[in-house]
Length: 251
Image: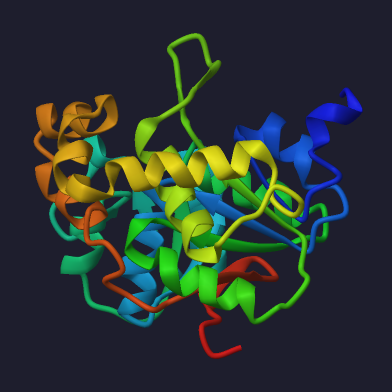
């Protein structure tokens, strides 16, 4: 890892996926993970309903066993959900009864959060629905070093596919932290904030039209895209404490 890739001279940083996170999280106080379609959006919907969320790697069999040990429900893949079950879809979580505990596996955002927690950094989940609330929470920690991480998606070969929706979600948090000057914020973080501003006039339309949005709509999950577009609809701030996300908005 080259020193330049760590953005180490900046208090506010931005990068992509687990490799980017590993590059920029060193000496940071907070890591903000963004996975708009859909882990962090689903996470905010669950916390809105008073549900405690346990992130988990994308391993459905062991996730079910982990949930059973916790006495929790487990979210299954969208395509596998049956009547009465909850999936990674925010629509399904919104329709379920609130409260209790939910194990929420995902191949990108959830796995990224779990990995970052092992570094000792405070992990926060953000999306378009709570971008300003997360920025307020960060600003209350005056002087904190912050890495905002866009989770991205995966190509069929497993490599990272940068996703426009995660760029906009990360940029929304970074823009709300502003104004970001060139001394404290890396060029990468300022560029992400600028990308959000460029898209902000029609977030719902952009989400429907981007590759990730079209993929979900084509599979019959247009409602998930609509929920993801609910800009600043909630004040919850998912903070990972131990192995579970809880609302830290008042902390």
